[in-house]
Amino acid sequence: MSTNIEARARALCAADLRPSVAAGDLEVAVDRLWPVVAREIQGDVMDRDAIKEPRDIAVRVVEYQRLRR
Image (tube, rainbow, N blue to C red; front, side, top):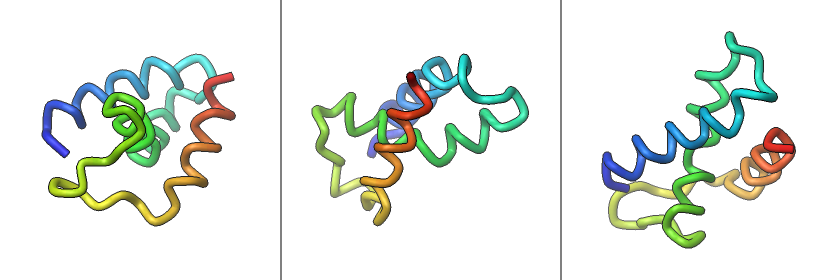
C-alpha cells in the first residue's frame, strides 16, 4: 500500500472514530483499523503488492463499523 494511501486512511479513520473512541485510545484504534479504511478507499481491495492484508480483516471491518455508529 502506498504511503499516501496509508496516510489518507489513517486521517480518515481518526476522523471517523474520534466521536466514539476516547482520546487516549484513538491512536491505538487507528493503528489497528486504518487497513479497513484503506480497503474502502481502494474499492474494498487491498494492494497485494505493497502490504499483506491482516489475517483478521473481517473482524476489523466489523469493529470499525461498530465504532462508526
